[in-house]
Length: 160
Ligand SMILES: [Zn+2]
Image 1 (cartoon, rainbow, N blue to C red):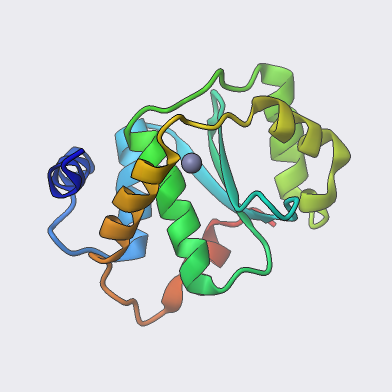
Image 2 (image 1 turned 90 degrees about the vertical axis):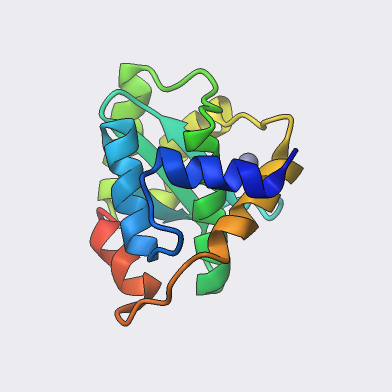
């Protein structure tokens, strides 16, 4: 894999300038997929740091709670890389999506057993996680720091 070339392609697909803020990245991913992107923290088992679920209403990105902000960004960018590369898995059915939406609207979302079951059922591992990580790191290096910080961006995006 030519990392630089693939990163260039992702930047082109997302209609991003060569350097961009995290906020702009999230905005353009929404435009790219044509649906809402929900980002929320989750209390994962220790070996999982992030996950992404595809529904009809939106795409749901989860990052492990308790991770430092830079790591949260990297996890989210990793999931975004999967989205742009169309690593989708099966996607949620209507009932599963309602369960996930319900859970992230509540403050105890990350502890919802029903949503956890959906997550564990629908989470897929791509065969090229190492490559996705390389691309995510490359994208991360193109980020422009934001005055308001990622925390504020994520807070605005969190439903809870
Ligand atoms: Zn992955």
